[in-house]
Amino acid sequence: MDLYIIRRHGVWANQAELEKTTQASLHVGEQMKDRLRWIRSYVVTEEDGRMGSLCVYEASDPDAIREHGRRIGAPSDDFQVVRGTALKRDDPQPVTRV
Image 1 (spheres, rainbow, N blue to C red):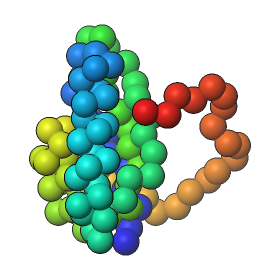
Image 2: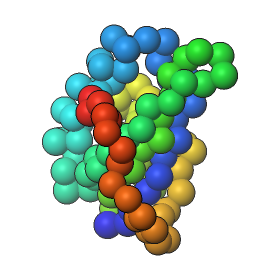
Image 3: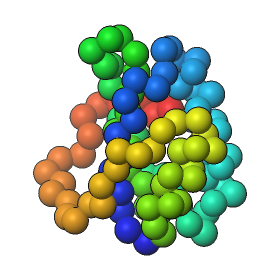
C-alpha cells in the first residue's frame, strides 16, 4: 500500500456534518480494510467558513481513495502519493481526535 494525502475542500458546513462523515468513513473503511486504511485527518476552516480537511490514508491504489470518498459522500479527487516523511515533532496538544 502507498501513503496518500487527500485534500477535501469545504465539504462540511458544521461539526455535525463532519461527525456524520467521520462515522461513515470508519464504517466504509472497515469494509475496505484490505484496500484502504485511514491514518489521520486535520480539519481546516476554509475561506468561506466551511470545513475542509487534509487526510492521510494508506491505500492499495488511487481507485480505492476515490471509491472511499464516493461512498462516504466526501470528494476525494485532490490527492497525492506521499514520497517521504519529515517528522520533526509530535502534534501539539491539544489535538481533538474525531
